[in-house]
Amino acid sequence: MKNKKKLLALCLAATCTMGAFASCGDKGDGPEAGATVVSVWLRDFEDWSNNVMKSIMDDFNKDKTDGLHIDYRFITEDAFGDALAAAQDSGNAPDIYQVSYMNLYSEVRNETVLPLNNLLPEASFADLTDSAKSLVTYSGNYYGYPQLMEPSAVMYYRKDLLTAAGVDYSKAEEWSFDDLYAACAKLKTTMKKKNGKYPCLMYDFGQAGWATQGLQANLTGGNVCLTEDWSEIVVNSKAYKDLAAFFVEMYTNEYVPETWTTGYNDQIIDLCDGKAAIVYTGSWGIAEIMETYGADMAKDIGVATIPTLNGGANKGTTATNGGWSLVIDAKSKNPTAAAKIIEYLAAGEDTTAPERYFAAAHYSKSMPRKRMQEKLAQTDISNVCPAEWLTTVLDITDKAIPEAIFTYDINLQTIGLVQGITIDALDGTSMEDSWNSRIGDVITEIEKIMANNNLAGNNPRLAKTGAEK
Figure 1: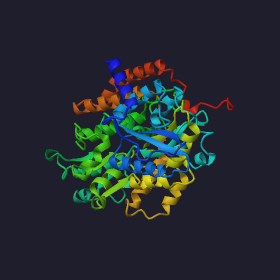
Figure 2: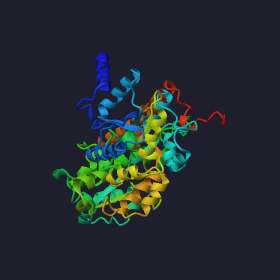
Figure 3: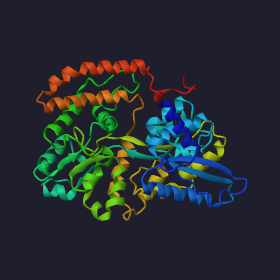
Figure 4: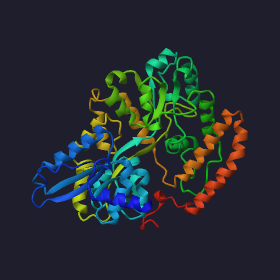
């Protein structure tokens, strides 16, 4: 089976096929004579995303005087990894490709991407927000240029459905867990389980391992499962008991469904369809609202920072910054030319191209560059998305932390603990008894994972440069 998968991957890397390669660069009249062709591989995302990126790259190719030409591919997510690995093995990797922030360190560790410090202008990096820099920096080097950021946890609510239940949403931005419970209790009277409706859709356990990381950091004061340097486990603590208690409260009171039919990424659909009054999902939900449902629906929807244990006007970290960076393959034959393309797409002084993308995204993706954020603050975007939505998303993004890059098994152990306690609570077991019976085994398993992966004290984000050692 493994050999068959490898053969398939090699085939994908060698040819532009329907399905795996969603679309290829327009060969039309081709590059100008003598032009350097830079290959770019992007993920096959929503139609609006693909269309605007195609348009941006096609416009670049219309210039027949710059000596550069983009040859692009859009590849489905399930095929991307195998296709890239096969292309790299055969020496045919693209010059530029997209890497998620969570997976960038694997590329750095495997030496499959180039540091960009000397390839892009210093001004490009100086213009990045601190949160954006933290996503792509290892040992003092920038290994990717942030294309976009997506805070993982945002609360969306239907104003009309909350009003019908007698819920005051005027201070939803300040809600605590208790405020959310109170709202859900009222919503249960109008959002009835027998009608397939629920007050809230928050985290399903299948995706809670990554989706709750911002909330975990909020509860612990900045840590996710481990201390920042990965030297100690922090799961056996009041913070994680509070996290478990939150899930227990939401499930045992049937504020959320026991079995989820919609994944975390797509819960905005249930909000718009009236199946839930409050949902959590990432900032990408904004694009779904505006693209699929339009401005009339947007008028009935509010966007806020997710509730926290204590609530308040300044909640701090509540999300991680997911999203995508552009990298240059370590064996690229044209790294200087590739850097020029990254400048055009995301990093250059002329920000026209990335601004087109963010507008097409209805600003559901957060801008990683300060000057673009400042320019946007002076722009009327009311015809693209509600301005207050953008303000909320930018605030969440600026306070968000990077996704954890230790092995994901630690996240699964942690959320497995929370899930087990929640299941026990549904069966009538007290949370304290459930916690005491489970926590020891979870800590033992995390210790094994840390030992097997040599994690203790080795967070690469904290690694010093040669000059600092």
